[in-house]
Image (tube, rainbow, N blue to C red):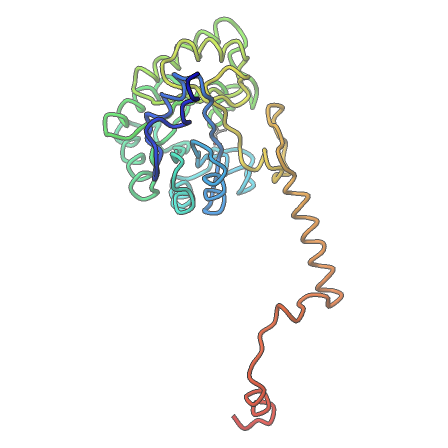
Length: 292
Ligand code: KIV
């Protein structure tokens, strides 16, 4: 009986090599991605053993309280990527290219992707849509930066799609979606996110691609899954899409902790002896006598 292969064929320490993702797909082992936006979340995701971290522009909604991701800036993603990469050492860190940072030209896309890698410390970048994004992806790959594609529900262009709703639900739209994913692979993308698409479509795209697909609201047959940190941990008051599974209720835990803290402050139960600093008795006596 042969032993189960280790999760990673070539990794022993340090950063996970990108080709490991391809290996995981080949062996049929699921790839785990989660979003993170700061050093503690990066560190915790690393500790939990996730393969990939996405510094997503979902931060605009779940961290910064906006209605959509559209106004997220490149500087914000650069800062958050710096924070995440200080905490996460092993997982591959993918920085989202925000809306407006790659649409104008290949040159703009390459310059901004370079910023995310050089200033942010990202290992790879992600951009949304097929169409003109295919050429942008190729230009960035040609500049030596790994690119992850993203098709289906693409929140940056949700207005054009008619809102935050499932995509690829007609034969024609499903074919377009698969063609976009195939084109992104041909452009050199190392993986493609499939967001909010029927499971059958995600399965077909996953079979059509040699590179891994990472699903969010795309059913069980993608090569991996991604969830947004605040959604999966119950740390977000806004509407969570139906595809989110909640693994914790940190919001409730935090409200409970803050409530107990407020109560302790008001009753004088906090701070206690163990939370206070002392000084030598003679220094205190001198201080109180006003002679020091
Ligand atoms: O910004 C983000 O978090 C994303 C994921 C939902 C894939 O793009």
